[in-house]
Image 1 (cartoon, rainbow over the protein chains, first blue to last red):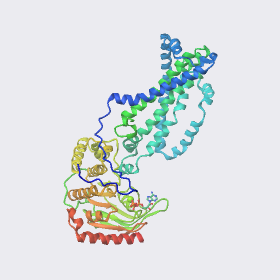
Image 2: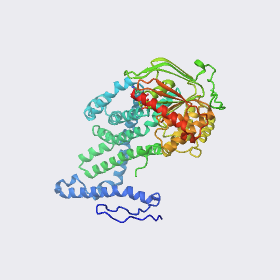
Image 3: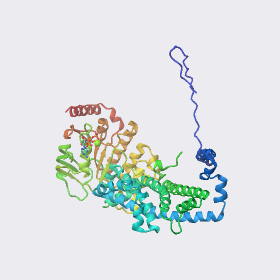
Image 4: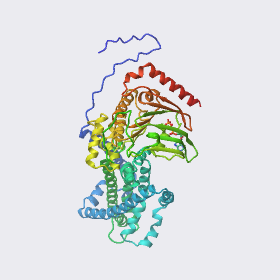
Length: 294
Length: 268
Ligand SMILES: Nc1ncnc2c1ncn2[C@@H]1O[C@H](COP(=O)(O)OP(=O)(O)OP(=O)(O)O)[C@@H](O)[C@H]1O
Ligand SMILES: [Mg+2]
């Protein structure tokens, strides 16, 4: 240690501000359990609060309106505890997911092509972009009757509704990402006479990846909601979760309605997490924001 | 293009690739070059400058006077609007103010990038990249992503990337402006080493007069925008240069003269 003398506190106006500062040893990487605790405890606490709030609101309802908020035991006994119902729930989830995934697939493939085309040709960007915004501002539900008249009541009209819900985020985030490539990186490619296509593949697309995946997660979490919404308008035939919601209301089975709602959230979250996971896998080694959140 | 890596010593430089000679046997010639941007901004007006093969020319001038524009015109990144430019762009090196690495590529793959764009075979790419990475002192960092390198290391990767094409003409646009003094001086020495060993023709834009004098065989002072050549100073010191040179009287004297000229340039 040094033997510098710590000066005595001489003046009235000067407070000695000298302390010894201890070093912090290099922190060991957080253990798995610790990571689980920091990542899981807050949402679990929040969830318990929500459940308590639910119970509190429910207890305040007059008895003849308590069916609006079924109890946990009710949801178990009349929905999740019944194997046949669970099977039906799963079957209907598959139906809904088929609509959601097909619609999302359409959005993603057309959206990516459109994003790239707008990036390539400025005049197409100028031509298309305003209408993308217009499309986004059209209330999709308001044109459902039109879609029904045009496409009937099968699978495709529902897929189209999902596509309309989820389209916007794809070409816009892709275009944003493609355009934000560093000017000098483009110059670097230009100096080697790289073609537009090579520049796109080796510079712009990888650069746009993280932004695009943010768009995918937004679209993805909308897709399930959109699929269920679309089903509310198409009640004929063997349907998905949306149809179950309507049936539950008609049959006064609110426990089943809640079960369907829970299932819908689970699916939505699953789609969102899937894209988040995929984005992490693809980009976290070089893109800081895609890295694991602390 | 065969990438023959034999090099002559600096002062002689390398002849133009295909023997087609430029006016006066020069490597780069600006002949009454002017550049007006589409919005009417005059970037350069009537620039005349000839650079011989194997010369290392630094360019200093007031901020915004058109130094970057001069390099962009020479490299063909922008097209000038008047006069004539002669330069063999086939083996051109160019480093920017920042390292402009691709963050998703490891050091090795970043150094291979330009060769990839030139369709070098994979085997050759790997060999040359390894060689240049060693040359800039980054052996052992091949598998690092740029995110994990310091600013000086990134600049070295950027240098290695350009060197891989064995440039005959090498342009530097304020490459070390963002680095601390010590790192900067070390990289100065590395660039001079490379220059002596590889024998390219260099144009080096900088804001630091000592850096310009230390590295160059000629220092060009540009006037305020629209840029033109105001003064050219010959630097009489032989290569390779020793860091102690910076403390010699004649070094300081030359720096002083250039500084005065630059002051005149700024005041107009
Ligand atoms: N694309 C452009 N359109 C219009 N004006 C431009 C453009 N690019 C550069 N300029 C102008 O041309 C002038 C010269 O720019 P340049 O970048 O060559 O300056 P510089 O000497 O490199 O400056 P610095 O030392 O700050 O890097 C500046 O005044 C700038 O505003
Ligand atoms: Mg500049």
